[in-house]
Image 1 (cartoon, rainbow, N blue to C red):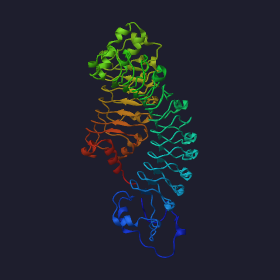
Image 2 (image 1 turned 180 degrees about the horizontal axis):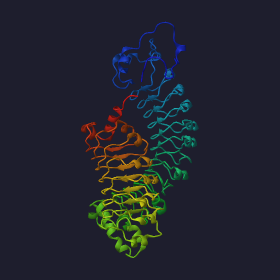
Image 3 (image 1 turned 60 degrees about the vertical axis):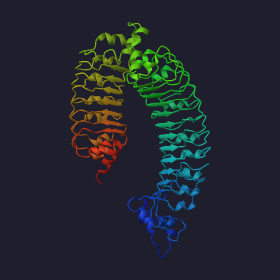
Image 4 (image 1 turned 180 degrees about the vertical axis):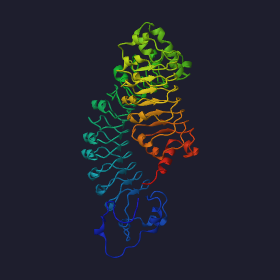
Length: 566
């Protein structure tokens, strides 16, 4: 951005360089490009006058008359940068990607306001130590360069939240990487790394695809914020230690893994996507996979027999098995898709296990009382499962008017409860006391409110309330700080408190479709974590249907544009 006058801190940092004589104006071509956009881009067809005038050697000394905060020089043919870069001390963004730069000037360390530095697709073999003094730098992208090593000074960039080092020639990383306490996204794919440092910070995403890793540090299991882990095409023979309460996506394709530890895998309590294709797995242990899985890729392994209990994973919608020497399952069944295959596997449970086996009742717990049109759940079911670790129950499609009180028998382990398609008019204490609960499905009931005691469910990540009788957004949901998914479609909700929704920093999916909302608060656009917002089917006039049809990003951008200037 460019603006007249003094620097960002109210003083003229270049006054000592000025002469007393009057100076010529900024070139008109430069001003023309700067007007309106507030960003001067040298890579987007500037007029000829601007091409000729932009230089640190010009007699007009334009850089002393402006306060440049963004400089975008990408996709040119630059090979070097002048040390005179220090004449732009107010820069917050410097974009140099897609050039031919072989080295950076030491003066880059004087850009102490810099937040974003984009250096990808150049020819850098090393970085000046001065770069690591940029205390405010939050994003550093260095992919597609020629870096072979990084200095210990990397750990001084303590404001970094994003670091991309992919597609270089790195063989190791400095131990100081663990000092980057604010780092959330680390991309290391396509290097030559044989190991990682003992600590790699508090990441949410770690991408190590296409390296030479044989093991990972045990500290990985303590990374309680890690949600996505990419380890494709390495040399792993075992599943590494993993964080059990945060990991949602795990990609281990094309390694040399031959066995799965049942306790380790089943303990991944929120894992939704697991990719294991292209390994050497021959058997799947009973109960080895978490009940939260929605996508499982086991293609191109050595699996000959599928355990029937695989069919009891309650959330599994995609199961990929191509390229395995499966026995006893016809190809025509595999071609019918995941749902038919899971149905077939469930049907084989009666053959594999005697009906009196308590283990069978544990596996069937999510299924055996669903779609029975029952008004209550028999005590015999709970008695048979007593003393066992029940993590998921499914009592949907019955005629229940209240949740079974004996759900409390499983309070120490229960993570997933499905009571959809019943006749519940209220949520009782038996649900509010399930403190381990993470997923609650109450769709298609007769609910019009939720009790304040529900705020006890501090681990709750998703709640489904579609097709009930809510006339307002349940107030207690604003108190559940770990919520990621709230589905309230097809109710009679008239409004939401956008300022309180902003406090739900993990909320990524919000369904308010087919309600009675006459107004969409612009502040809803400030919910930074939202990735899916459904508003169709409401009577509001703005945003218009054409904007809603473009999807979540367009709606959020529109809403932010409507926020009154303070």
